[in-house]
Length: 240
Image (cartoon, rainbow, N blue to C red):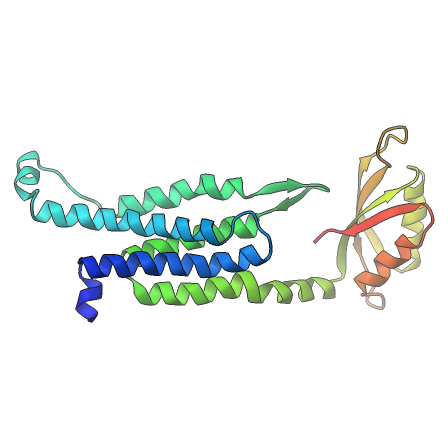
């Protein structure tokens, strides 16, 4: 059975393609549950395509040693199977870039999804090459990074002294008032990025504050609540 899965046979081709689809689907399922634009089908198809590209390379290599051997000898052709995998890894950049979206307040969303797609493609290449143990280990590690580490990352961020938040307020003069509230909490303002200043426009003025909190006031919620309580503040959002 082991030789049947490692050799280039119909059974091994089926096993590698099915493994690639299932592995990509397992990773994509978590993204689907979180309503990401790239989910189960996208990850399954990218892993399948990567596995198929390596199998095509293996097929051409087998044919060049077999049915095409005479033609190859006459033409003096050389074969490099690694170029297929390299082309897939380079091409996935276009698909991954499409999942990265620019958000308000200079935020970028989709980087984790893009790197997940890249890892899924590499996993598909491993499946196509018959590197089964690497695929199984990759499934565990990728899911660990995408699913398990997310709440841990948020917990770490909550314990950090640095906080960044966007505030929408009534008038541009309110920046001084907000700064005073921050200083009352013994925090240090590192940077203020004013986004909108036109009070006559359709939207209210807004700014992004980067603040380093004092050790005795480490609660992100307390900081945001103190500012939100001000009558001139319309909205406040932490940027993570």
